Image: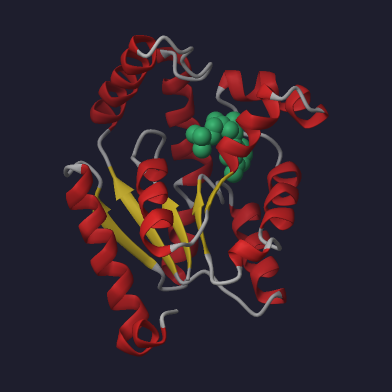
Length: 204
Ligand code: AMP
């Protein structure tokens, strides 16, 4: 199955994507992680996007679409993937639909993790405290000002995508403020309902 995990920064997309990969085998395709890896490895792409990530702005559609196009052709995406942090604009969603259609595939489900802004801000603060406690450096875009900016970018550029996917009848909205295991369970129920017993029987 090809699933989009959708929601504002800090909604738990990464956490739930990792659990899905572990339990269902569909790889997590996080454009944010790929871009951060490029920055860390100081690749030409990394140098190009470093300042944009630090500011909490979106990198260009062409860049992320290019990264994803290359990634979905790897063999581990044969049975599907969990898209985390992509698409973030209508242009990206249209490009993804086209890419998948060319490969005889489609997005099966868009899972929206609904979390209030106040909770997102508290979670981000906790993430920074945890990172510092581990003796590691927090993400450059986890400062309170940048988080606030990432939230406004989300509402302006990304939230309108919900309408795009709703028209395709693919959206399921879940309570992202429930404990992690409860969110995982409601994701599992939604996926199993969508797949139906026949696909489950065939192990797809
Ligand atoms: P994330 O880890 O998904 O929160 O992404 C971290 C940062 O990477 C974002 O704030 C953007 O600067 C950049 N980024 C990640 N995914 C995308 C995307 N699909 N489109 C544009 N920029 C992205």
